[in-house]
Image 1 (cartoon, one colour):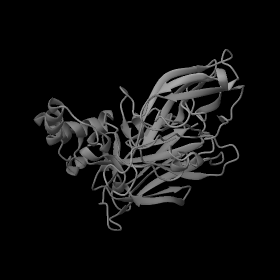
Image 2 (cartoon, helix red, strand yellow):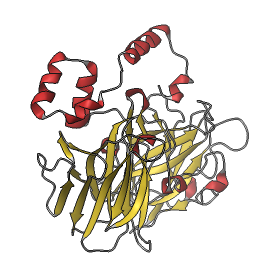
Image 3 (cartoon, helix red, strand yellow):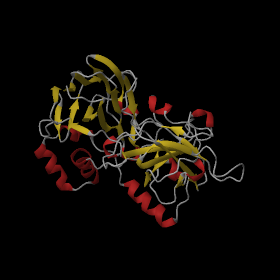
Image 4 (cartoon, one colour):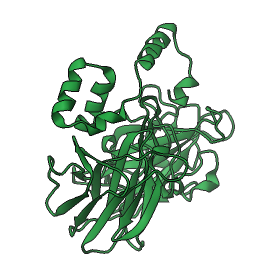
Length: 385
């Protein structure tokens, strides 16, 4: 159960219903990874909850995304502490800015909640278009009204290219689960907010967006906002690890192009070739054991490509290689996806590489170190323009 909800009172009927559902949520047997199609179909005839969940996970990708961990790697650098204005370059009396074509317009955020929050552009459709693009990383603090100092605060503004925006709002609630780490939560404000020629260039008349941390009605997700940034101007190649939400296919920021690991039944998009080095075919996934690998090769012009391991708590160690060079190694079971369902996921992405033919390989390492098992299920490869 999310630590956020543990800190909130329940009414008696809600508590009874929640505990009933939790009691039915048993771990899914890893043995089903090795069923063939006929055996798997027969196993569903029993109608057990765990078998049905496994079918949804690997066939329809309907797993719930409410992880309970902080972000890792570079994504942490994109998110400042809402209670520390020095943590983010946009937290000043002047609006922050995003690079882009066209005039910039200021937008402010008024926090009607009880906790100071950090606001990030989540999606952006440039003015005159409907296609959503990923905005560049930026954020602004919007303070709650605690009766001390000015409210709304004067550093709540961003200056952004014109277009249509949605927002991600995250905040800190302390160490609720007493694990020595601060617990963060976020929600999506889908708005949308339109910035166009009719909006003022003056902060005094800037368009204002109402937010609330925590929200009164929107779903609350654990972890900070994770904003994909595929803009590579002036940047060298880098690897990013996204672990919240770990199951990125369900988020608003999932990669635009997907190549399912089980390319035997689900052929990849044009220009992408998948090669299986001994992995076991299963639904939309490929299951790897020690020494086996799965790789994607493309000459298409992408700015980023990544791979999504996903499975139960006993999934094992793996490494990722980009053009033959190791860029990541780790225990895939150490990244939570859904603690209540005993599921784990991490998305490893390489970005800002030069044009040409590139190969991203994930290789199972078997049992290594103190954690993890032998099996590494691979869901898909992702690609971003």
